[in-house]
Each structure stands twice: as structure tokens, then as C-alpha cells.
Length: 143
Ligand SMILES: [Zn+2]
View 1: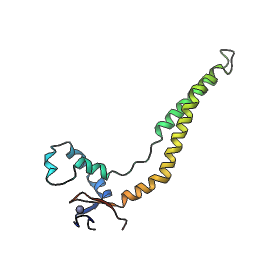
View 2: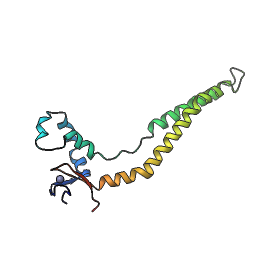
View 3: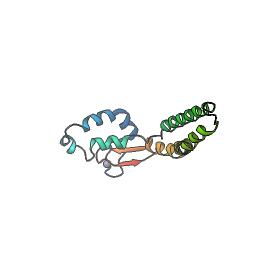
View 4: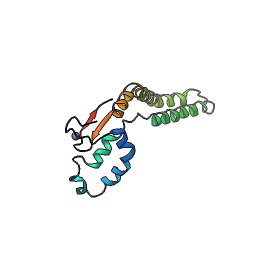
């Protein structure tokens, strides 16, 4: 596998760079900058960032808020007897929580859409991407 830019055979899959070297790159990136300036055109922190696989969108926060809002509404339901007004408090809770619930549902919907359609392609592209260790060129080659 040769780099299409400088034709160096010293290339590596991003996946391999990430799995074997991310910790090394991260620890060296906090060190003295000048140490790497001569050996590579790409800084070590940038290298670690390029080699990092695309992240799936997290739904944890949205689910957490959703569960909490559900709990708030559930608490509102339990209060109907004490005030003699069965819908007073629950309706206030619903007015307060429904936009947040709708927002969370929308976020979860968007995240799952991204994870199911866009992310697999990005991940596939990342896993078929190579980096030249000589000139730092990143290129896609599924062979
Ligand atoms: Zn190259």
C-alpha cells in the first residue's frame, strides 16, 4: 500500500494507528512540541484526532431527561386528592414538561437516524482509510 501523494510505502490504516497508538500519541502530545517538529509534518495530537473513529451519537442524556420528566409527571398524578383539584398540578407539570419531552424525543429520533444511516458509512470509510506516516496524507482505499 503506497501513499498516492508521496509514494511512500510507510502507510498505516487509521484503525491500526488508533488501536495501537492513540495513548502513545496523546501522552506525547502534551510533551515538548519541538521533539516532533522535525520527524513529522503532522502534530501528534492532530494525528490522534484524525485516527479517532467517528462517534455514535449518545442518547443517554436524552433518555435520562425523559425518564426524569416522566417521573415529574408521575408525581403530579399522585397529588390530585390533596388539593381537591385533580388536574391542577398535573396540567402544570405537563405544560412544563411536554416541550422538554418533545425535545428529548426529537433528539433521540435524530440520534438514532444518524446512528443507523450516516454513522455506518462514516465508520466504514474510517476503517478503510489509510494514513501516510511520511507526509501525513489521509486517503480512502477499501482494498
Ligand atoms: Zn505520503
